[in-house]
Amino acid sequence: MRTADELKRVVAAFVAGNGPVAVDAERASGYRYGQRAYLVQLRRHGAGTALIDPIDCPDLSALDAALADSEMVLHAANQDLPCLAELGLRPRRVFDTELAGRLLGYPKVGLGSIVEAVLGFTLEKGHSAADWSTRPLPEGWLRYAALDVELLIELRDALHGELIRAGKLGWAEQEFAAILATPPKPPRTDPWRRTSGLHRVRNRRSLAVVREVWETRDRIARDRDLSPGRVLPDAAIVELALAMPRAPAELNELSSFRARGPRRHLSAWLRAVAKARGLPDSALPEHSVPSDGPPPAHRWAERDPEAAKRLTAARAVVAALADEHNVPTENLVQPDSVRRLAWSPPAEITMETVTAALRSAGARDWQLDLVVLPLVKALHRVETTGDLAGGDP
Image 1 (tube, one colour):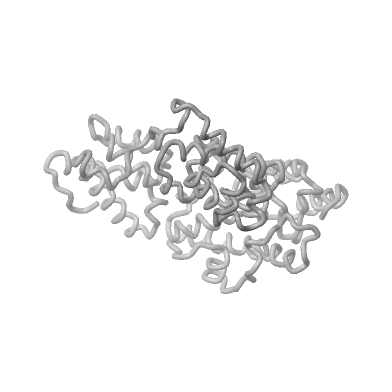
Image 2 (tube, helix red, strand yellow):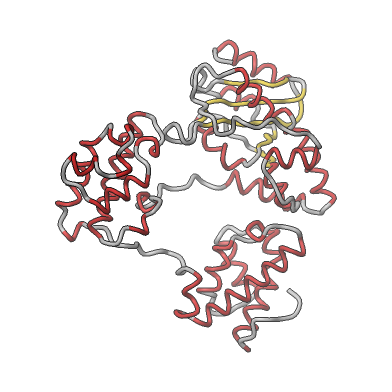
């Protein structure tokens, strides 16, 4: 579907349909800059399946208004919601089949795995990592994309029934609401620090090279609408930082620059290196930036033995509860919340103070109901006896 008239017909068909709306989006990760959608798939009982080309139809606000009261079913909703929002499609109610599978304890929650486990069907594989910005899209790719929503409503219905039988539907509803309530992530501070292999860079001047080259690469990638890694791999950035070449001949000797792609912007890389070389010491980046959270857990025993004991006890409690309720530990309570609680516990450890600490970190009511009392008991044991073991969680 690529025209305004076709979009109007899709809107009318989906308004006439009934029940939840299955939604999926295909991006071009690894090929294009950013995470925009290059195909949107929809399915609803009574309406059939629609494949929308968001390049030709970039405004789905009419569809959004028409389906405002409908539940939308997605698999791993937090991956697709941002790119759908860019098109004006913003669900008010969602059912996330991946998250439902996690709460039910399925060991594999990829769409293909959970469809096979729950419904007994095997989905076609092979195009998940394709360049969906390709035009025209091959017929085989379109069939593959349509299959991603073909069984999503049936999967939703089956998982919904399992959640009811397991007494976990309320948990899932709170999780789904939290997905929609979570604001977009703010831009990362110093995103260049995520360069793969950065640990090999030992001095601040070389770190400055990484920063300057990374930012140069990002500008080029944005201008050319290419994935940054296709403009210059991270390994090449690190190699530049270690070698700090001054001239094209020196750069050409680096192994990462023997391929045509990295050499295409040779002068830009040399300018970035030269800029880093010329910075005063005061402008060089530090090896690390202050964190608003606790240090890595492997350092706790040395820096704060009591905090290390609290973390060990808290993790044991969470692991036991997760096993008891057949839920992954990270879905029972965020690991970062547990670390922060163990590193900087409230001055007085009570049900109220621990509840407030976890709630401020985003814990939902169902999670608090399960973990607060066992955590309070565990932290009290450490505080009063230093004992890491205990009785029932």
